[in-house]
Image (cartoon, rainbow, N blue to C red; front, side, top):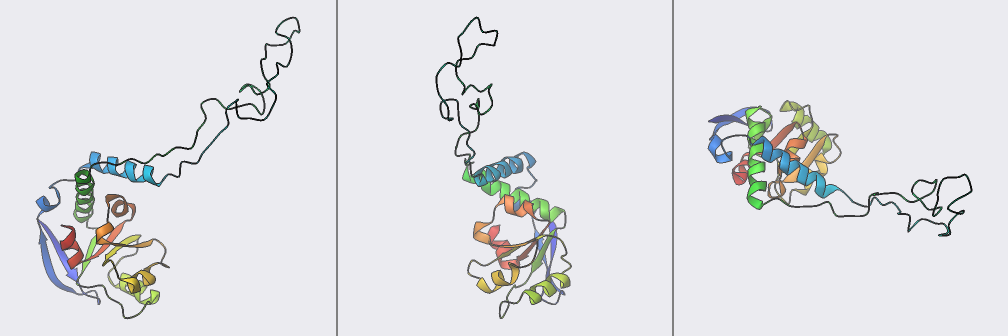
Length: 203
């Protein structure tokens, strides 16, 4: 059983939460986390690297000199990969690196990432996360009050534009709605700041 303290905007503890580890898979599945991270990294690749083969580089296809009796090595074309400005052998071509793992595996990876953060004490739960107007200064003050000084992922409601505008200019900070949360984003940053309601919705 994991015991979590819930804080208010002034950094004071208002209640305690008890979270069974079984609700998040019971254990941190490191192999599954690695597989999920590799998938998310592969899906971010642009895949536009391109080199030219000897059929595509500029140059004549004529044989430079006779095959024999010149004293020089045999050469069939100036576009040979052995020559300067020649083609590239087995070079990269534009391709799609993306692939997907099963939906259940993605969900299990997210639960493992959250469980790992909870076990390491890197999750801060607040009762609510609301600002009257977009103010980066207020958000920075809130983070200091909660004792968050490292990179942090803030999990909030889908339509909280005021909070998004307050977070976007803080280095190392990111905001993501709970509906889009994934294992990669959770593991990418040191701390996780989440409201009580969003934590319950993820479970």
